[in-house]
Image 1: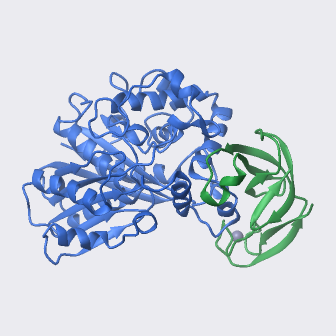
Image 2: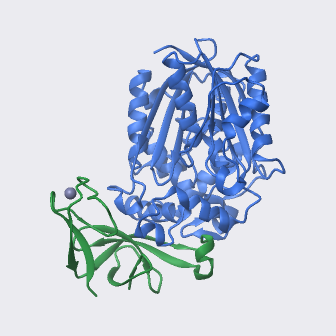
Image 3: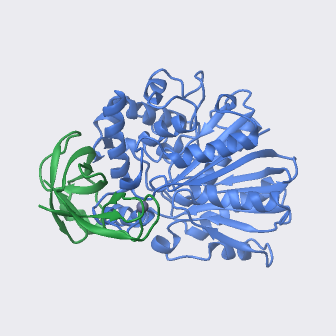
Length: 375
Length: 101
Ligand SMILES: [Zn+2]
C-alpha cells in the first residue's frame, strides 16, 4: 500500500444556511482544492445521507465533478447514515493507497434545517432496520441513546450531570470555533434544566439539525498530513440484537484495525474527534476506543481528562453537539479538525499534537470508521 | 397473554418475530412456538420528540425487555413510567408493535 496524505481542507460554517446542498458542497470543495494547490483530481467521493429524502437530490458526486470543472472523472456517493463521511474518506483513501488514483476529492454534505424536526426525525429513522417490530415501535435515535444512557447510569453509577459535563465541554470548545453552530456559552445548570427530548437526554445532550459541508483533498505520497490507518466495521442495526448495549462493538473493531495498522495504541493518541451525536455516545466512544476502561468515562469527564490539560482532548472542534451535525458532512469535518490540529493551525490547538484520531459512527452502531493521522 | 417466538431448528436460539433468519446462526429454519411473554425491563426511555407518524402519541415509553424465555425485545409500555428491573408481561402485538403492561 502506498503512503497517502491529506493535502487540502475546507469547510462551510455549520448551522442554519440558506444555501442548497450543491452550493454548500461546492464551497467546501473549492476551499479544499485551493488549499491543496489545485492538483489534478482523479475521483470524487461524496458522503451524504438524506439528500434524496430531504433535498430531493441524488447524484451529488457527478454534479460536483461537473461544477468544479474536474473533467469526466469517476464520482460516487457513499451512504452509511451518520458515518457516510468517514466511509467516503476511507474508500478514497483505499483507492489511492492501492494505486488506482493519485488524488481524490472527498466531500461530506447535508442540508437539513429547511425541514420540520418531526420530518427529520422520521428521515433519520431510515438508518434503522425498519423491516422489524423495533422499527415500528416508535424508537428514535435519541430514544436509542436514552435507553443506553439509563442503563449506563444504572450499571456504572454515573449521573445525568456527567452527560451535561460532556455537553458543557464541547460547548466551551465551540465558542472558539468560527465554523460552529452554537458558540453561545452555556452553564451546567442551563444544560441540566433544558427540556427533555427523550429521558434522560435533554436538548443540550443531543446534536442539532444542521446544514453544512466539509471537504479534503488526499493524494499519494507523504507531502501532507499522513493517513496512518483506516479501520471500518459493522454492528447490529437493531437495539434488541445488540449483545452488550453498553459497548459499541463496531467502534472497538474499527479501532483495533486502526491501531494495528498505525503501530500505535490509544495511549499514543494526542487529540481525537469522536462521534458525540449524543453526550452518552461520547462516553461510550472514549471507552470503546480504549482511552478509558469500560464504565469509567463518566469519572474521566468529571476529572477533566477529556480536555486540554487532561489525558486526551476530545472534540476540540465542539463536536457534533456544538459544532453541529450535518449528517453526511460530520465524518469529513472531524478529519478537517484533526488535520488542522496536526498542522498546528486548529481552533483549540493542542500543543505539540503528533498523532490524531477521528471516529465516525452510523445508526445504532451499524457502521463505524476510525482513522489515525500523523504529521 | 401468549406470545409467539421463533425457535431456531439449527441452534435452538429463541428470537422475536418478524425475522427471516436466526439472529445467531443465520439459519432459515425457524419454528413458531408459544411463550408466556413475561419479562424484566433491561432499560427504557420516554420519548418526547417523536417521528412524524407518531407525533400525536408523544410522550410515550419505549422499553427493552429481557423475556424469561430468552430473547430481548424492543416494545411499548401500555401505561405508566417504566423503570429498570420492573416486571412486565406481553399484552398484544398490534400493527407490527409489541405492547407490554
Ligand atoms: Zn440459529
